[in-house]
Picture 1 (cartoon, rainbow, N blue to C red):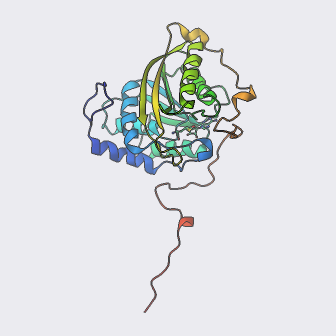
Picture 2 (picture 1 turned 45 degrees about the vertical axis):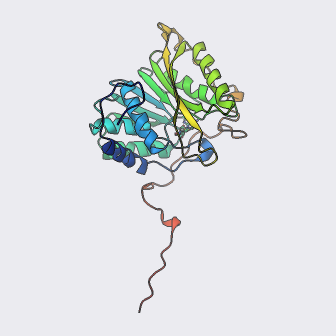
Length: 284
Ligand SMILES: C[S@@+](CC[C@H](N)C(=O)[O-])C[C@H]1O[C@@H](n2cnc3c(N)ncnc32)[C@H](O)[C@@H]1O
């Protein structure tokens, strides 16, 4: 498989990589559209995981939200030696207990000792430790709040790395639409205000299972702290300004939920009994 254009990486076994990502997809909870959980398509997950594994090779990586399960793919592809590189530690911080439990169950069953998850709402300051080397976030895309929700997630990522290190934000990117341009511009000025700069932008590299906008793509925005920026640590912006929470997940969909709780353990790879009924063959 050829990785993203311009990248330097070993050839990898595409069949093995796709099958490994398929294991992860089987384990993903069904997405809750009201919280902008919209999953990346499987081919793009393979490419993205390979890229993230190379970018974060031997580093401690925090995911601020990760319904897509790029965290799990990255750790699993490395563990299975399908990729010869990958982060030394991966922790997922997500407000959806179903996602955190699914990550932990997968880590247990596949013996991924460097993969962990913690229930966390980005309303709160990052819980620590704040010594990660890099962070990754695919946040709510902020179509109705000019990207404020993106900035909140990115802010928590910056806290996770102690305002040092690097980050990757995955945000909407569509040349035909106005709002993604506003979001990208606001993201750039926000990160500059926090002592980070945009190191690289990879346009339109992912697509999603999004029925009302199937062609909407996203880009990778790679961020890096300016030298000596750690003095910014501790100046964490409060999220107490309620205007930052309005339209967080889209027009009229404000951030009001602290946690999504898991009601029952579900085997996501199998049909639920409520979904079907059996009509028996008539006995002769
Ligand atoms: C908002 S979705 C963005 C789309 C992305 N493709 C996905 O589905 O993962 C990213 C993740 O953020 C999590 N999330 C949403 N609101 C959150 C919050 N307030 N605090 C922490 N995580 C949150 C969701 O559960 C999801 O896993």
